[in-house]
Structure formats: structure tokens, C-alpha cells
Image (cartoon, rainbow, N blue to C red):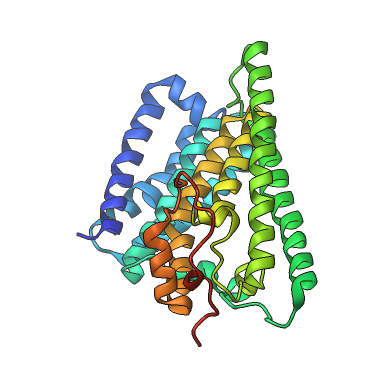
Length: 315
């Protein structure tokens, strides 16, 4: 049986166990449904979630589609319900996890794989920057990307998550001293991580004749500056920034959001990016990857990179 069907089997069992708990344990019912009437919800959820997941586990592909679509629809509904009423916050988290799992499992059932290449399709498709754009143009493009991406991923999204954490009553009360320590630590870490991100982006722009954006990638393999110590300093900086913002907001959900982003980047984006780099730079990139780790910086940092590690891509 495939991993997708195994997931649906686990989802069916988990859904059945949850409904038993809802009808037998008032605390579970309140935490996951709030004041919703469990009998009315069960009339639709048991056949479309529990039974459909069981049929999907048995190999019925149409049932996998039904279970996944229903899970996503219920997740959207309970997010609205919890945000408006401040009830059922735990139910939101459970259903978000179930939605992600159902969609991934559906891909495995229908396609036999997860189409990770879609992440780098359309406007995010891997393309090199115009080599004749000049440092000024590449620098301005890099600065604009920093403003947009930091504004969204370190500003808008964390604030929305922090507000939801409070609305869903998932924000535990913290002692004042702990909040102060969290804010101070977050501020210091955010400054240091942001400095690393800016230096890394500037190095990529000036040394690589391109930008960090996949649709305008550098024309040369960059192993200068922070790239001498670690292969992905911008990703490392971004994840650390996300955790720092979570500390600033005293939000455990923002910290989880940042760590979840690191998993997505490491498991989906990084393999695609490194395959593209290997295709374009060949042995230069392979030597570089063998010498410099992805996440853990090497120490001490060498004074300079070998000349053969910085070369134009192979056409």
C-alpha cells in the first residue's frame, strides 16, 4: 500500500477516534468544536471525512478526492468560525494539519508523487538574470525583493498568525519577565540575522550578476562572503529571522511557522535549486557542495574561495 493510502488509513482511524472523544468527553468537544452542535457536524463529517478516508485507504481514488476536498473546506469554515467566535482554536490546528496531510496524500494517490516542481513554475521558474543588467540594476532588484519578501514573510504573515493565536485562545499567559526576555532576545537575533541576510543578498548581487529571486538568478556561482562558510546563508538568515519575530511577538505559532518554512525550503525548494545549480555549473558546484555544508557553517572560514569555484554557467 502506498504512503498516500497509509495516510488516509491513519486519518480515518484518527477521525473515528476524535468523534468518539467528542461524544464522550466534553473537554474535547469544547476545545475542538466550541458551541457547534456535534450531531449536525457529524452527519456530514463522518461520511465525507472518516468513511471517505477509509475508502481512499482501500484504493478508491474518487474517495481520496472527496476526503481531501472536504477536509480543506472544513478547515476554511472552522478558521472563520474560530476567528469570529474565539472558540474551537484547537480544532483549527488539527484541521490545518489534516488539510496539509490530505492534499499531499491525494497527490501520492493520484500521481504517485508530490509535484514539488510546481513551486518553481510560472513567475518563480528558474531563470538567470540579464548578464548585461549591470550591478546597479541587480542591486535595485535585490533591494526590492528584500522589501517585498521581508514585508510579507516577516511582517504581514507573522502579525496575522499572532492575531489568530490570540483570537483562537491558543496564546498561553506568560510571566512578564519571560515576555521581556523573549522580546529582547528576539530583537537581538533579528538584527544579527537581518545583517546576515543583507550581506548575503548583496554578495550574491555584486559577485553573481543576478538577484536571489529564482526568476533572475546569478550568472556566476557565488562562493564569496558568507557563502564561504555555508551554502545557503540567506535561507539560514530568513529562518532565524522568522524565529526572532516569533520571540518578539511572544508567539509560539509564529515560531512554528518559521520552522515549518525551514522544512518546506529544505525538502522542496533546496533540492530543486541545487539540481539547477549542478546543471548550470557542473563540477564547480559539486566541488563547492562537497566542501561547504548546507546548514552548519564551517569554521574557521577560509580567507578566499578557489578560483575555479567562480565561473559562468555552462550553456
